[in-house]
Amino acid sequence: MRKQFFNRVIVIALFIVCISSIACTKASVKSAPTTPAPASSSSSTPTYQLVWSDEFSGTGAFDSTKWAFCPRGTAAWTKYLTSSPAYASQDGGGNLVLKMDNATIPGDPVAYHSGGIQSQGKFSITYGKVEVRAKFSQGQGSWPAIWMMPEPATAHPGGWPTCGEIDIMEHVDNTSVVNGTVHNSVTDNANGASSATFSTSYNTTDYNIYDLVWTPTDITFYVNNVPEYTYSKVASAGWQQYPYDVPFYIILNMSGGAGWPGAITNTDLPFTMQVDYVRVYQLK
Image (cartoon, rainbow, N blue to C red; front, side, top):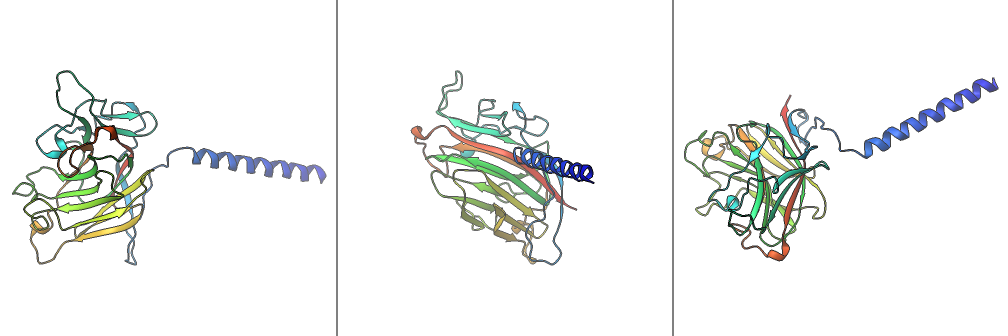
């Protein structure tokens, strides 16, 4: 009996040690993708299935099967984009790092250089849930953004903003709020400012989770799992009021120095945005 007692004690002790070891291991690694159910006032809560993601677990160049560099252009956010790993790459610690600075690059005589990537031509989705965990630095002239555009751009006629745009998260300068917006020809004025927008506080020193839940009838923005704003389709309105019935692709960029944020204070450079993951779900 005594021998059996001590054997039981040893087994129980080993079980406790194993459980403790597993718990410590789980706490030390990035959480795996799950299939979350977003907040809903309905008695029937929708469930989602992960269909596409990037955990940015590599080192150096990003996964070119999922992303491409955002090209430089004439729009304010594209003015300083630079297709170089120096401005968009994986840091080996589980992050995509997008950077903006005023480094001198031979043969590219612009005042600043910035990084951005997009899934255009590689992945797009119509309806579902998009979740991004990210943190970024502040500074005068900075403009990090997580957003979506239609693919193809001509899915609805008329160009921008008629085609639609979904801004999951934007931040400018040294403000203590992040912004989310939808753009279309009904919401936007002649200057491109939308009436369908919100601002909310966020953790300025750490990662935040930005979610978009998109259905055929509404788009809801979440920050750190809190619903902040919903834009709904009007039943009697045409597609111009809700051009969000076509595939959209994802854009991540660290821009600045033009447009909304204004001029850069060089002593605030470099600006960075670190993206922990991008996860996309569809309704089961």
